[in-house]
Image 1 (cartoon, rainbow over the protein chains, first blue to last red):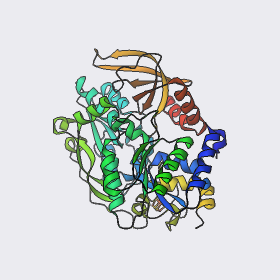
Image 2: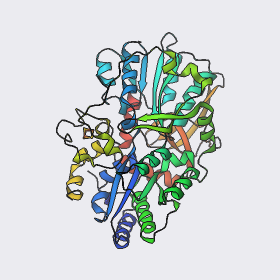
Image 3: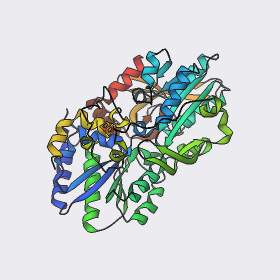
Image 4: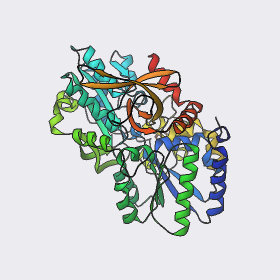
Length: 368
Length: 86
Ligand code: SF4
């Protein structure tokens, strides 16, 4: 494990942390929405250095974790039963489906390929005109421009053997779902910097107003997180609720207009199932009808039995911040990164895996 | 998969009869292709934040270097290298 003393602006991080200690006089619960931030908070030991009063709750911002079981089963079916070249980000491979993961489908002879970018999948389609290529398009708003662009590239170059299996989710409705849950007691949010780099900040103003909570757009490095937490705690102590931007060096208030245009051209807002949480209205993207030819769920006849989640996994409560990973009875016992029962144990951005890998941090901070 | 990694634009190429334009972007010791369609003003010599093969914003050199350094330290660049060898 690395410690923050080795990182950029270590002195500044230490000063922010001291300032948080001085500022926090009452207990506060703050949620970081983004899994990348969870990973960084745990990995860099920031959780241990926060005062007891400041409780960080880990949110649902891990696309791998919230992709529904049903879609994993569809991807496995497309790889094994339809003989497609099924391309995916590496993190998705070990996520358990109802009977198998994509990694197991690959071992069983499926042509499953790990890619860094959806644009590479279009290239594979170009090079294999006789085969169908499907990209498993998961992600939050940050990833939507890349997935949308892959469809546009295919369309522009007349490629017809390419399609995407979409599992796109968006952040603001997830914040609403967390705030509307009677069991959650979150008082402030760190919003995900890279999501806002695309979308801008406008859509967070109504949330700040409606729920009277501070929201601070924050980056993912230790110095960003320490500063973002400090900004949130300051607001909480003063009883104010504003939208602030800690990550101004990357996030412009209007986001990236070109990227938003591409998202809007290819996708439209739709209801989405979030694994472990359930259906959240208007919380994701689906392909617009004009792009139906690139929609794997329409292109292929996918017949899979209905499956239900493992009863032992409490991922829903973990993703909404109601329970911490180690409060799950299966944590580190039946469920480990080698044999995950639920998706949050798979991805390095999942809260369960972050806690598992850095369980030392956990032992120090979470004895309460 | 959610991170955006800063890299230096080396050259821009037009592919497939001008239908697709891609840039060569250097991340430390490795070079990968990335689309600049979301940052139409970016040119060779600029630093951009690249997320899954698409540049999402232009950043200044110092910022790019610091972030790259941090990502290397926490091992996030290894993943990129793995993908390049595969
Ligand atoms: S530890 Fe495993 S079983 Fe428990 S909530 Fe996390 S992923 Fe699910």
